[in-house]
Image (tube, rainbow, N blue to C red; front, side, top):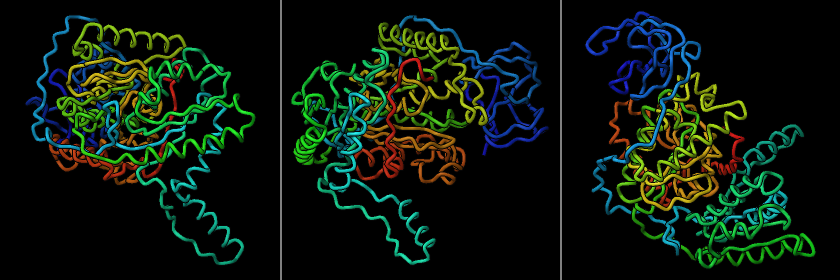
Length: 539
């Protein structure tokens, strides 16, 4: 195994691929470099002597500026390096991209749910959506009834554990049976999902519109077979707003869509009874849909990272980029999110925009977001978490340069604000926060029917309607947290596997998940995270 990696020819720092000792000698560009100190795995070290004020380059772009002079072989830390990002501007849109060879996948298919609007789902869910937080309790009542009686609820293993401990305390034996799934009444329905949230009223009108746009995306989502919407009646998020955001009725969408407004009923009980009767009929209709073959062009990949480490930007993220380029070349879609983690690589993305207006929208959204962050005393430079920093991502620009590799090298076909739906084939940029769940919530709301999620430190994040594939940047994490990791990209280093071989394996895994032949770890754990972004609150 190599001891270090210099990512780009113009870089003046390298990444330690294993723990390196003080005075170790490394061969760098034909010369011997002696380390000035111990360099932990995943951390960065200087390749030549540098002065205070010198710019640090990784991935061929500026990622920091030194605040102290460092001899060659010194580790970059938050004490000696501060964030700096390259300026950017809109120029001529003349990007040329050589699409990868995808001849091996042209005739490959997955088994999906075909919708009347031309989209294809990788799953078949029924959704319950509240337009306002006042309906959360009603959703919980309905959830208990529907999941239990229709066979979607799994026995809680911890309830059995407590029963066993209580039995021992009472000094009587009790047989503890293993959890058993009740047979489902509707076998072609993958689940009934309840999107509880804290919005819809009392916040800014901007946040209300953002929420409504997001919910409209979930209703349109190809993995959604039908939807039941609950409203109180007097809140900011009105049914008419949702209908306007959809621009279509349920019939136009090709799926059942039911609205219920509590203030139009004589009692809560009367409304809930009608909801159960009507939804049951809708479930019966949605259950008739079955999986049939679909081309890979019907896949929309959400590209996400969370709990990143110093290997994320050199193993898992570039691997995702290779797969995204393949799907784009097959005329599918990919969506790259987390605008705070594109800081410092804006110029590359601008240059890759297919149209000037697309580049202008990207610049406008980036600058507005940064300005709002600064207004509350923050900024993109404060994005790296304590876990990121401990594992070598000490500036936002270092983190961003690695995170952006998830987008591969395809041209940018579109730029989306939060809650906007992806309609153009190829790569889209989606304005979301770096917060994992707010971002994955947005990716699904923009139509992603599979999310590829890289992680180096581990996170259980999932989504109610979209399978989330967890891809580890290192080979230690899958052993340490094997119940949340689906794919080990760390084999690039631990086993010396080629990126192309890993990409082939990941493509096969994606097709199996899209076909319902495999469940992701997040699906098995029923990790249904849903947190809408309140603009300007999260970074």
